Each structure stands twice: as C-alpha cells, then as structure tokens.
Image (tube, rainbow, N blue to C red; front, top):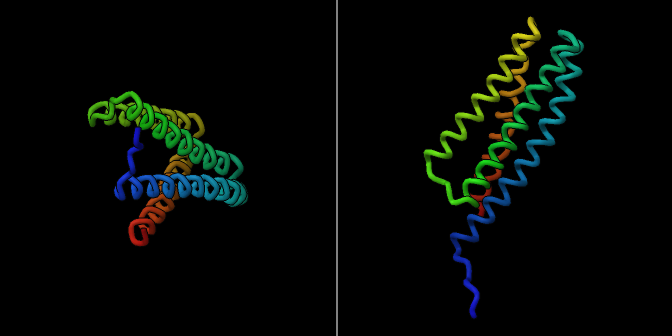
Length: 141
C-alpha cells in the first residue's frame, strides 16, 4: 500500500495550527505574568480583593479557552462539526462563564466588576498573540 502524500495546503494548515498552539501557550504565560502584575498593582492601588478578582477573571478566561478547545476537538472527532452544534456550544459556554462572572461581581461588591476586566484582558492577550502568530505564518510561509 502506498501512503497518501499530504498536499501543500494540508501542510500549510498543519503549520498554522502548530503556530497557533505555540502562540496560545505564549498567551497563557503572558496572562500569568499579567496576573501577578495586576495582583500587586491593584492590591496597592485599590485593595487586595480587586487584585484577586482580576486574577479570577483571568482564570475564567483560561477555563473558557480550554472549554473552547475541548469542544472543537470533540466536534471534529465526533464528526459533529456543523455550524449549529458548534454555535450552540459556544452560546452555552459563554452563558455559563458570564453567569459565573456576574455572580462573582454581585457577591463581591464593590470590587466585583474587576473580574470582567480580567476576562477582557485574557481575551485580548490571547487574540493578540494567536493572530500575530498566524499573520506572521501567512506572510512568511
């Protein structure tokens, strides 16, 4: 039997996925560093509760991104990668993460809203690192 030789397009796709995974790992390291900086800065400026809530927001961002990866892998391996099932999964996950963040914000007034800042910062860091890596990969194959 002869083995199928991957096309150039498949190889480019695999390289882009590897690049995205490396850059995602970079975003985790950057987010951890930002958590330490945020904890210290907010702890000194506002209070330790605000710094902890910022880190909780970063943590919720990490959990969300892990759930995204898990659901995408499951959708692809189960063969259920149609738009409807993926979209419903995204909406359920976002509703859960949002409900947790709102509950934390309400329970830890007046600093509870800082959890949303942590979530936002994590998303921006992840988006920036992954897109930067993919852009670099597309421009210089």
